[in-house]
Length: 172
Image (cartoon, rainbow, N blue to C red):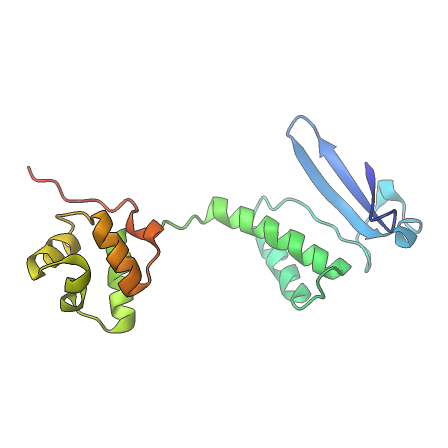
């Protein structure tokens, strides 16, 4: 399938698999370049973009290498568009195959304390007494909303991280 883009200045060739609900971008280029290719037998040229799904580690490595070559491409150029599309595909692949767990609230606080050279005593104005700080940091007590607000302001940690899924130790 061929799409005309930006008043027919550019052409986009895609393959669509309706069963799998996949749209594969096969080529993107200037209209004058489109006239020089056989859209049915198209292969990569200097002015075209060949994008394909990243399904394997080998595909991922190849995409990363191509991204490295495209780094610094001018936004809006063919190379810039290819870089943008590849980066999106790599991001989707990495999100699926290399998920990163969000740190629990205590790990986030400990990390920031280490970065700033702070001690538990420095947390007292944000969390409460020395005993309360100990309970929270040892996961025996959760952060209250008031604590979350003070820690967010005091340490600059996103409230989203502070109200995360930190587990409080249960007795018994």
